[in-house]
Amino acid sequence: MQSDIDPRSLIGRKAFDRDGHKIGTVDEVYLDDATGAPEWAAVRTGLFGRDAFVPLEPSEVVGEGLHVPFERSLIKDAPDFGVGRHLSPEQELQLYHHYGLDLPAPPEGSPDRDFGRLADSDD
Image 1 (cartoon, rainbow, N blue to C red):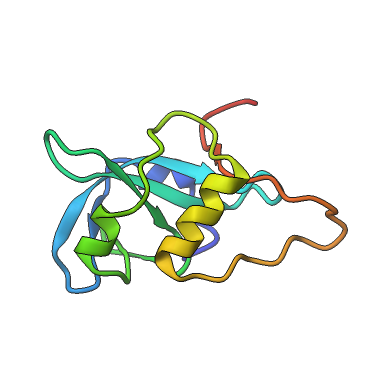
Image 2: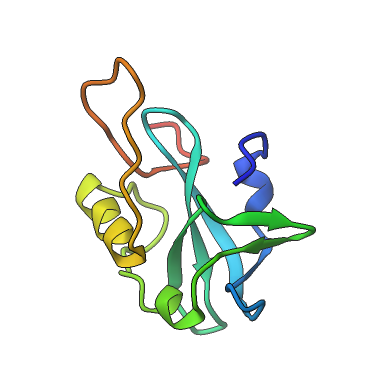
């Protein structure tokens, strides 16, 4: 994903699956605690749906939309952790496993890794 984009600018964007089908609207953006980089987006999947977490890497912002390179069914089956809370390292590992992604390497000089801080939170 573009590293220079403001994570707050993602909120409200439409999200699309790998085939271009709309999956919902970005509701929240979660930052990596160690780097501050946008790492996950919670996408509201429908009027009465829930939020599905999607990885921002390898997703792309194209025009006004967030394009997620996974099938809609995989996205909608992602673990549901609720929104507005910090993602624990265990929850984030579940998401990486669900999407078949490798866990990113921790930044140099960082002995531990903490995950999933909400973009607008101060804690």
